[in-house]
Length: 99
Image 1 (tube, rainbow, N blue to C red):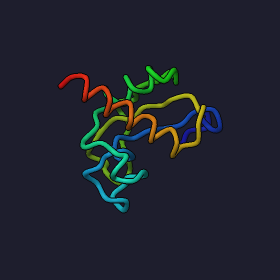
Image 2 (image 1 turned 135 degrees about the vertical axis):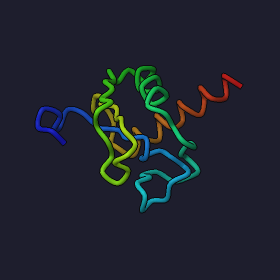
Image 3 (image 1 turned 90 degrees about the horizontal axis):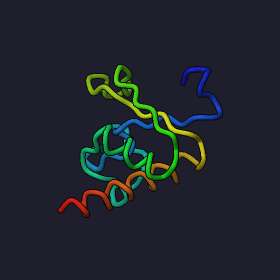
């Protein structure tokens, strides 16, 4: 994590909440809480709805999945696991509203 974000921001990669990935592939929350193949846009919209001031960085990649570009940087208002669960729940709600 770059020094400018340390302690004040949390970095979110789509792999953290992707239910199609295993824990060893980068998922950080239980698969029951995760969502299949989340996009950067979905993470951004969920974070914005939670009031976390998201910023998309399209040129960055999760080291374990270096070919998938993009991450979202948000304000650190919650612990990381709680934050990931809230983001995933918000994405699930938005997907349910669309269908």
